[in-house]
Length: 348
Image (tube, rainbow, N blue to C red; front, side, top):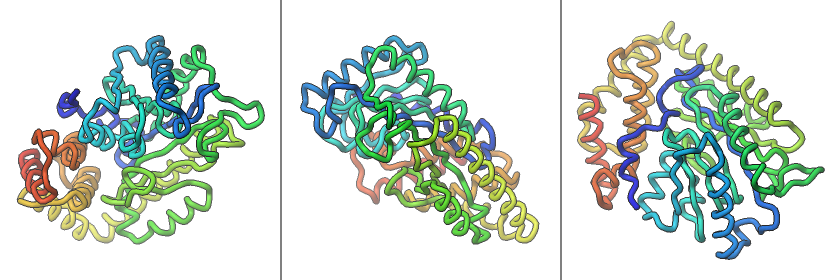
């Protein structure tokens, strides 16, 4: 099976809407669940993994929100297809590269995906555009409630939901925001903010989550604690922190425009000129230049490019997407040429 149809789509979580969407690109809520009576995926044999997939996919058919969702068996997909799903944040790196029987369920607008047999039997996530953690939780919670009527979860009255990794025990819930903070980076205030956020028990990661570098001034902020707090407490704490970070970033952008407007405009227009004329460009440089243009759009310096177009460029210029567009494997040097050509056409 090929996933070429995805090239015609951009997930709804990238449409640039929602609260604080000029700074917060997306919100995510993820629940980890395991079926009682089965070993965790790392310990399960092939028969057990297949039965887990069968039970979960059968239960999904009775979830109204998931009607029309596609079910993909990862061992039937090519390596490139799995990388495309990973680049679209629909599966994790571990899910894409792991061995054994695994599957993913994806809704049409790509706002919900369910990884089956990743680290846990079920990893249910919802992505929303902007700062919409409460909406993302409402969706995941409603789906989880229906699944819980048909599946028996591993649960301890004392500890809560039992998971493969002890850090997920309790609610089994992780919340995160993908946030664009060029203002704090350019005003050299970002390190202080990151230290403060870490001290209050939150993780800071790059665009692709754990183990990824920060590029393009894009940061993922997520909770560490899942035990000892309710889901609502976690959501409220995360949203409170997120809104404070947004205020800091807004203030930094205002300072830049007040005190260094010419330098900001120069940075934005140089990025735009480079992307419109470059013949060879790698992924990292693309992210950095798109970051400057995103800032320019949000500050009304550039008025004839919309965020959705920018997000489409961000998505479709990633390595696996470029190779799927080309219909074949490409060396990195060739991808850099194809990437530059794609961007020039989009910005023409």
